Image (cartoon, rainbow, N blue to C red; front, side, top):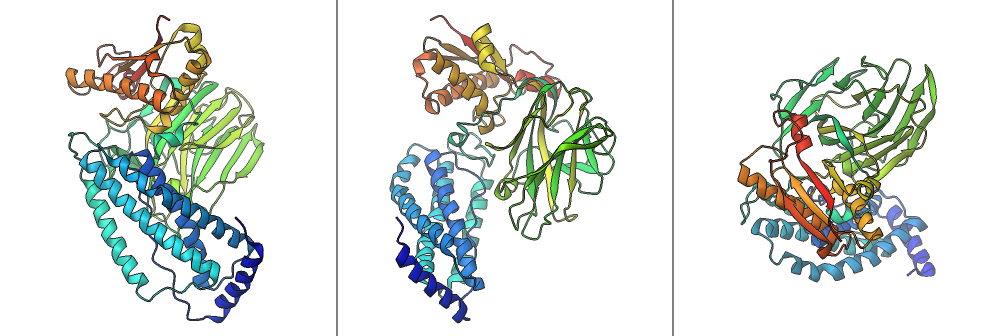
Length: 519
């Protein structure tokens, strides 16, 4: 609800206060948003919404500390924030019931994050009211108490995140993506024929990965808070890393995870990760043809995602900056997904599609190489790593294939390592399956899980069954498919379709089948 006359009066008061109060105290130390999700949707939503509003209020508190007056739009934003804060606060009591039945590890992590969110909300309510009334003046001990509490929170968070055990003896998921419900409308569908896959598990730490080339440097590293091996890219002028791919079809998808370290408000506005499709494996954008998209890494402002192409030795039709604010995403291990369907090019960061250009690839069958180029970072301070690079032919509409052939097999539904936790970026496929079931209510499906050969036969059989059950649960709970239309099974490692001695083969074997059953 708006009160124009009332807030115009306050606007005058605010302006006078900011300009005539030189002793206005400094802005409070920032409460840091939790870096990872809990895995309980109500808790994750509560924490995310609390910090989204906190960020808004904190920004305007910074204006007050700098002596910058608020304008009418600022007043509206703060007033709306207060309304939203009231709604979020009302949901707080219900969240505690979501912890019932959870293991001790998850309860501890959820409690910590709820406490942080409550502290952020308390600050936001108090500060928004004071800003609107032109009375923003914090007590002298705000900074000290905030810093002390923040340090305590960070230490607790660190202790919890370093504890990899729980009551059930299962490892908690380590990804920092949002919960599955956020991805329920995600429409990316990965290709179903793997052309290239590398998680760097077969490479030695310190070496350049065996299936890549570069004209500079780069090495496999391990990190203390995330699993597995990561490929650290080195920033530099005309410095490229190129996976061993020499032919790309007309329809294909590219996926990879990004991890960053050391990015801050001091990171250059020119810091970018370039993803290049090229006509040559030389260390340049291309000889005659190329198309590229760049992801911004700077943190002090929201920078565009840039897209540009070049065909037949001259500048192409596209050279654009696409509005985006992915600052939080690039600091929280985003999943990047790209779909090329003939001339059409689409790019997602996590669940959000930022690029969708119908004729970005101006000529077909000329771009056969993928390249990464990192530029604009401070050596040794700002770092970028990539992992789980997958290039696959297809990305076709699985709905028609299921209806036509009565079954499909896909390795595009990904799970956390050794776990039945579905990675949220896989829900594009699950969504398509749900659409088939919604279209024809007579269809029933058997969902069958398969694993690679890592681990014992018994463990893999159980894991394959659990993964099939997890897919069923997603169809029922996210897309409201009736449970009695779905059965599940698991075959473990008994029916491989690829060589379990290779990374590519293992990726092929980790798959889920959907088979139509008798009506």
